Length: 382
Image (cartoon, rainbow, N blue to C red; front, side, top):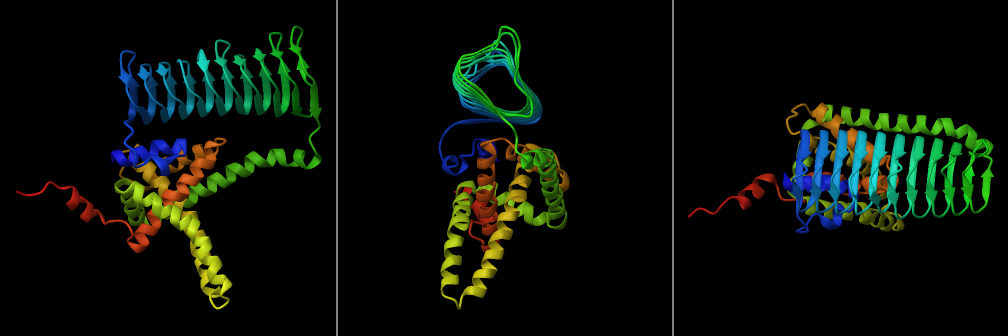
């Protein structure tokens, strides 16, 4: 179980393939309410999954968390990767933050880099970010100091403090409050002119690009289309686990017990299969087999997401016994990761690698069976 929880946390980071076999220490916590008290120190990376998460102590490593209500008010020596419905980070963060949620508030005094996606995103005035900031959402308020560039994508964007380099983005309305100061250029795409309140200053040039007609037509469709795709993925996952619960339980065991070997098998399956298919197709005689292999490869890749989603749900919600509920929780968490910029790419890659590895292992019995593993781990009889 500890091995898979390592995988679940590293999924957010997107480097699972290279770290599952390392000896780096981790701390894993799950449950309805998770607390790191002010007097507590975690001398490792912290992986937390639960309904309410409160990190008020010191973490001498990275923080990975997913929940409904998350608060990080302590000191984190590394990076923070969190997804939640309501998310507030106010502690001293010595690394970067990558956050996603419905309502996200960042009020940390010091942060390295920032990437946030949410419906409502607020960076408070007491926050000073040393490098770049990337924000995506509906209502974005940047009231802290940005040490380098600010990139935004949102409906209503407000800047109320110093940006030491350039501002760029695609917005509906962009406002500079009276306290705003941009030392570089502002380049943005919008139907509306920049609103610059008295006292605001821009040292460089301000350039507004009018959205193209096809962009105007696609803007309303994009979120709806994305929601449709995610909803369809969720429904498909639930139908699959309803039809094949034993298959998902077996693939969960493969990933949980042998994560490193499963990942290696997944890498081979993803990247070597196209080469084999190409060689078969080149022989002409092997074209029918190449077509069948290609279709099988696509199906396995398609099933890799639900496979890993089930394993995540199984480990995050330990007390759940219903395969449907387990798949629902895991799929929602995985979907949240998918929509986070940059992290989403690594989440898809990791899901493909581990999911494909688990499916191929089960199909061809490539990983050691559970009984053999348990026998190997049992103490020798005298």
